[in-house]
Amino acid sequence: MTAQIREILFYKGCTYQIATEPLSQLLDIMGDEKPVLMAPHTACWRGYTGTWQIRDNKLFLIDFKGYDKNHKKVGIDYIFPDQKKIFAGWYTGEIIIQTGKMLHYEHAGSMSVYEKDLFLKFEKGILISSREVSNRKFRADEDSAIKNKPV
Image 1: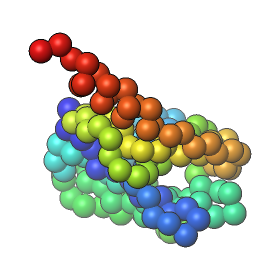
Image 2: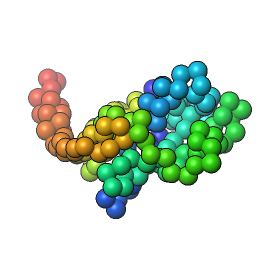
Image 3: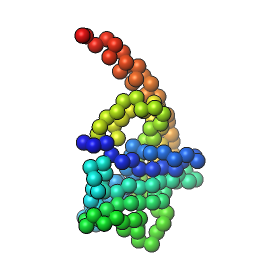
């Protein structure tokens, strides 16, 4: 599977690419009522990208670019008519922000490994906790495996 285009998150004055798709939970809930979205290319199988913002510890969808069943480009009003900024009250889970240097590339989904992962935990669209994990050990383990590989 091709590496996928990431969604964007504005958080604490910075812009991040995230390895999470918060809108997918809402689309799953919508079931048969969900809008038809088509992949514009192999790097966007979900058929859309979202732009998110955390403001006052709340998660908002602030932009959306998708492709309908006719492969026509559509915006946020395709899913949320007459709305510009949508509170993501449906979202419970973690948003993963990968930062720093890429330590390992995976040509699938959002599986590449970066120096750090920041996990932002949400409950019904409200940020309830965060934790940061260093992946430097991954790089050290990978380097060790390469050095100790039998010839």
